[in-house]
Length: 427
Image (cartoon, rainbow, N blue to C red; front, side, top):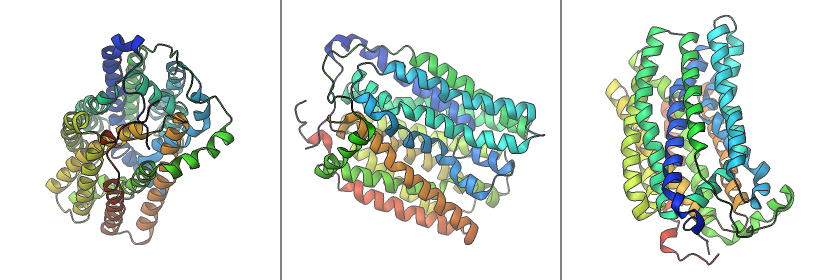
């Protein structure tokens, strides 16, 4: 039977719940809101294309940061099985997570027009390196959330993080439009990267306010070597049907990235708009995201994460099918609104679901495996996207394939039992 993690923080930290809830929410909102200035779905693919990046690199752009986040956690997961304080590790990796955007900003502003190849390399590498740095302690961060936030407030916490990010994202859409209209090219791109670094720095300061108290209980498992730890994962997964279905739904859901890299580019091509148009599309996406987060916040805590996972996937199928046939400005704005709505509903549900169904035994390692499964899925999606663009060049075919994979993901999610209706095993 799947075991729910800790239902509430340890008694000695109960008075800190509100402080930590707010700090986690604001920190995440600032981080994600800052990333909207160089949105990996809309802004960065355009930057890479303008700097002369190949189609395969454009295809990889939306998943570069996530590749780092998904590949790195398994490397240190076994170390976090026995630690009592997770925050210091997160603070250390947080510095390295933010610096790549400063490096990209400096090169774009100082050398971008003269050294486009160097600028292209740093713009492309920044999200990957940032993801790797954050990914090393991703399971520590998740366990910090599990430790400091009650289980029935985690959905609203995640939705709240995204809500703040979306409000900032709306402002980011306007900023992107104004900056690129006033300073087109590398100067504008450099200013956007600099703005991202400033926002990420503010998020770091807020994260430092989280109060974590030592856990007096013994670790669920003693520390072990990575290889020994991994050998124990498959038996756990084999016994847990819910976990297997979750991993399948999560992996197939990455099929959305087959179409996302060229969605903004397709919109510009069809409408004939200039590069500042991506600011309008980003604004529509953020408005949809606000609606999605409001829905996730109110329904997630009440009904649990499973309905959010299902609804998000239904909306993703609708979005990809519509994108295959869209031909006008209003249609693309609506599609980006629907994309924001669908993405944040399913993302809140998926992250919360993962923390609820993870077994107490080998918690850190299983969380890392959940992330690792995404890596080949995202790379496969990016590879299919690049292959289709270089062979057929058909955006309609690309969107149709994305719709099929997301539909299969929906089928797996529908078969998952609801963890809120399954009595947890005793810890």
